[in-house]
Image (cartoon, rainbow, N blue to C red; front, side, top):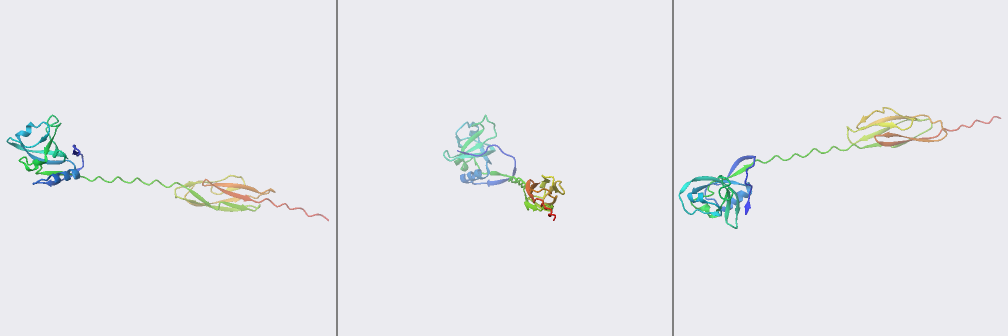
Length: 229
């Protein structure tokens, strides 16, 4: 048995005629597959009021009127449609009944006027905004060497985004960073190295955007006094 959804859902925007005369089993089955439950009509004869269970076929009785019902499925093995009535769950098979395919061509005129509900196409779910790229940095150059007399230099920082913030901080007292505040995006900072009066070389660093810039400085030269003759 093939069943489609019994209850209606929101979003109906129109109706599609499946057939208005000479219905066929395949047309109704295809419409069930494509659209879901179908509204159809049938002529009600007095024997239909006595239906309790099983597959209904018109047997006898006078015409009582015409009625709208909902086709919700079909059963090729039993050769019948599964239909929802509007007379409450105490009638028939819990409010449903089965009717033979052959009733498409009987006095019940089952399926002569069949309509499918056309559902609105839901708007596609928008794609989430891509996560912003993480901030990363590079510096150039990564090191510099100075004479004992000191000097100045600069470091260029390249950031992956214009809103990426970074700072430059000297890690030794003899290295001074100009504009040591916070910077955003790519940029260049300047620094200076003081005179080395010691007789040994020294090494220091500046932390720039989380990266280490190395400063090497040579030792002071020892000038020997000339001998007095």
